[in-house]
Image 1 (cartoon, rainbow, N blue to C red):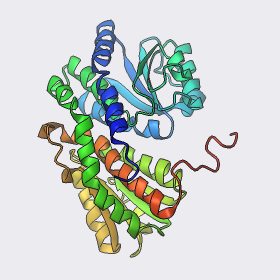
Image 2 (cartoon, helix red, strand yellow; image 1 turned 30 degrees about the vertical axis):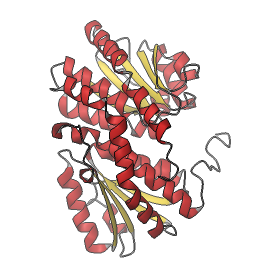
Image 3 (tube, rainbow, N blue to C red; image 1 turned 90 degrees about the horizontal axis):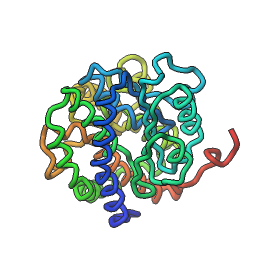
Image 4 (cartoon, helix red, strand yellow; image 1 turned 120 degrees about the vertical axis):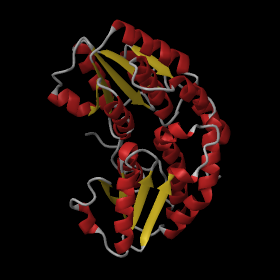
Length: 333
């Protein structure tokens, strides 16, 4: 597979899975001590990656759980933030300035802070109350967040089958390698067909809305300097559909949760207008070893793996490195 370091990928994913005992110990302690609300704090991609777990909590739990933008939290404040709050942060490098400032702000308000990163000596790891460390460059954080949220909801009596889910996640590194291998032909074909496409229209919903936002902004815009529109499938018919034309590249992310019909509806309309509609659907991947009732929860992780292959092939056909930046962490701002 193009640009895919399988041993490194397996090791990184295994390091995320290996955090299960520490995550469960942490969750159990927090539940036993008691807390009133949970903030999932991020910046850019790490903010978007919190949304599936806010979504899970919102539809399953009475606990106040919200995803928040780190910089906005510091600028605007939060009346619910205090000594009975828990705030979770994720950062690949552990050096994201907005998140570092948000950790300081949360701690100044008495909140208990948790950090997931791959670097134990990074500013984020050093400044949170507890840091849970995976191998360097481990991405995404879905395994850790799903274990945390699943255990939390299970302890609250709001999620059945957590132990079964967590046991099945032990095999997720191998499962995701299989996903990557199966995605390779479609990823290569999409990139070849769109090497000169300068604008993409992305649609997703449910627990894939965060990934839709992330792939649009953090990959296509930041890493490939392409213009995009991103819209939630439930909001597609309230304005954004007017941008579709026969040659518009429409990328649809389809998962397996209860919002699937909303994305089906958007796809059906998009195909009436555009002749260039591509659907990336988690149903296309067997995920052997994962029970049917858990497949929907894994959609963000599966799509991240699939689109990781697309990204590498776009890098190839467009001769545009995914590491190239003009402004991000290049200029002061």
